[in-house]
Image (cartoon, rainbow, N blue to C red; front, side, top):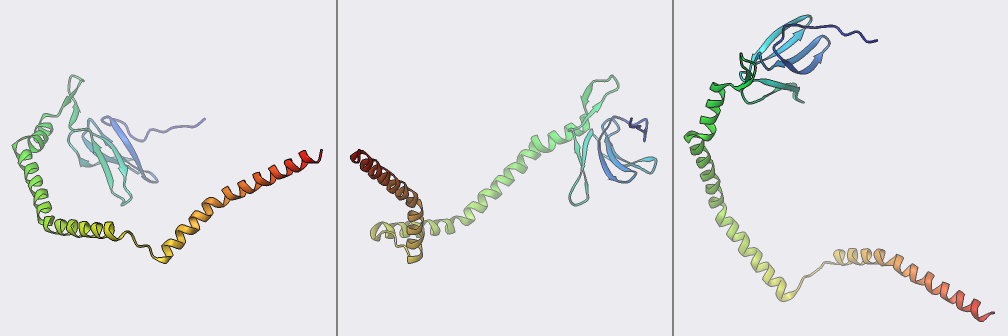
Length: 182
């Protein structure tokens, strides 16, 4: 039977443990709104997250990445409630007038990039139209290597069909000879 040992007690809803090496584990505390590390028998807070940090992972770059559930915390009465200061700030920044102006500015910037490239796009479109017109008049020209590659592929593709036809013809000939020989 495997014996488990308790490493720490009194944590505030811990989640997302990440092994960092012998006797080292990072984890988040949702109710504690922090990232903590257990090291050599001690727990210490390394970052205060606000909201509710509810997951962590170690990135390929060695950094610890923490997920936050959007600013939820366990209220004194027990039910989950939005952490109002965090939620209000996010809503104002992203959905309020400031967020709308920022989105409009980003959209205008993208339109500006398209308009700046418009002359080059029109020139490229004109060159493509001229090339297609020339091809429609004179047809497509294939170089010798392309023709050989097409021929090789066609021969490979039809080879087994020809073999099957010859086997069928020989089989019919043998059956005809057998029928005449009786």
